[in-house]
Amino acid sequence: MSQHRVLVVDDDRFFRESIGDVLRAAQIEHVTAATGADALELAADPDVGVVILDLELPDIHGLEVFRQIKQRWPELRVVILSASTQEEHVLEALRLGAFDYLAKPLHEEELRLSVRRALETFGIASGWQSLRGRVDRLQTSLAQLWAQSRADGASQDDIRALAVRAAAEVLGAARTSLMLVDDSAAQLKVVAAVGNKVAHTEMDAVPIGQGVAGLAHARGEALLVADVASDARFASRDAPGSYASQSFAVAPLLAGARTLGVLCATERSGGNAFGEEDLALLRIIAGQVAHMLQAPPAPAEEPEAAAAPATTEPEIEVDIDLPEGDAARAPQPAALAVAPAPESTAGARGAELAREICDAVTSEVEPARILDAALRPIATALTAAPVAIYLRDPESGGLAREAEHDGGDGRSDRAQLSASRGLAGAVLATGQLVATGDPTRDPRYDADVDTPASGAAGPLVCGALRFRGKPIGIFRAFPARAEDASPELAELLAAALSAAVRNVLLYRSLVQTIEEVAEARRAARESIGA
Image (cartoon, rainbow, N blue to C red; front, side, top):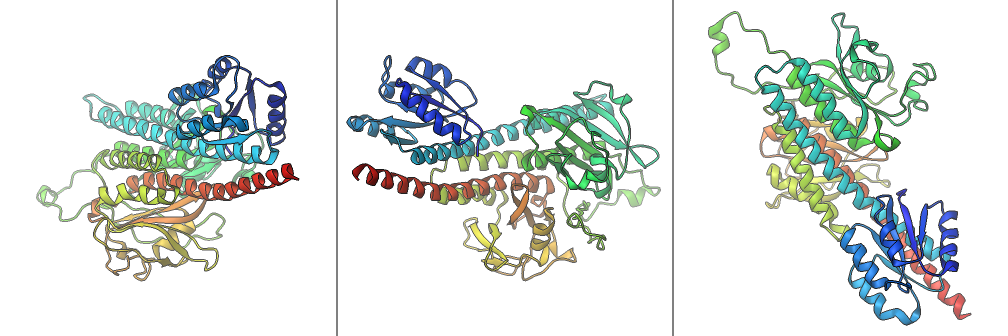
């Protein structure tokens, strides 16, 4: 549940204290106000997410206080308190957007459920606004990175310094660092950092395979650590107190088959742990930085042969690791054919598309249509037919199609997918994405799983959908163009669609809560009548 505060506004001390007792027992933070003027002052606190507002106040009528709150802070959820004689004012408040109303005398369970529901929905809306803002910052940072890398006289040091600043800005991290493989090819050396008390040149190198950064490099995969002290992956590797920070997000710099180093973020602002969205954004930045830092290929010895026009796009290898804990590594799959986007095109386009998804979802007021709203801009931008979301089916154990957009041409994806076969099963098992112009080249490809209902093979983008850190399903799209099947694009789609799915799951839990509220109200009326 969201940890935002509740503002309780009532001129009656008895009701303020009674409501406070209920919220305190439910471990919900709250502040109180006895007048409309105090309420408007306290509502400006960014930690306030819900207002419980009595309509009878001594200085300003509660309805006017409500109007001003909605005008200044439209995102706040306002629960109206009313007596039986204020029905007309209650209806007016509901027409103007009040979240709920509670009739006096209050029923404790009804109050608790209503406030929890209000906090949940406020948290959902706040999360979308936060993601949209971070996508905007990502888009700006990528543009600045590429502009700097192309500037006359730009050096590798300039790019490195910009990269760590971009990561700090986008993720809201107090400390970020860029580590590259040193000449010995056995250690990672810090080449740029922000937020550290010592210069990066004085920071210790990290052996590849050790610590959070070394493990991320060795595996060639991004790592998310909520609390390193309790993370089983590092309990036996490092001595207690080895880390100044507890939460990490680390992304490898992948350049074809090579891993150049890692981009690390620690100490997220507010003391919160990094999440899946942070990791997705960091991976996108790391991918762009890897393109910038990669040395140009050496000139061919035979100019005539080197000058011959290429017939195919170069490929990027996308390595999909086994789940953590496997004792042995399986044979590596063949490289997935992905046409690399020129410069920051894929990252910028993905940022723009993620922002469109945020806008579409936040403007959709009907929960049942949220996922359709999220898929619509993807189908339009990629000329993809179809785009679908699948979630684990607890009864069959497979993947059931939860939502779909056909791109306007009527073509459909499969209703059910195996959770253990094909590229779809690999994405669900590993949490890693697939972005390829020709999925048939991958040895894990299964035509009965990795094609739409028509059975026609084509470019594929597929990513894991996460809830509380665990893959709970996948999304996939079949773009019309191979160049649209880019890892950078897939990263942002996975982050945005995971957020949309989380919202839907929370809304579904709220439906049950609403039913509980209704039951509490019925019980309250019956007890009063008795």
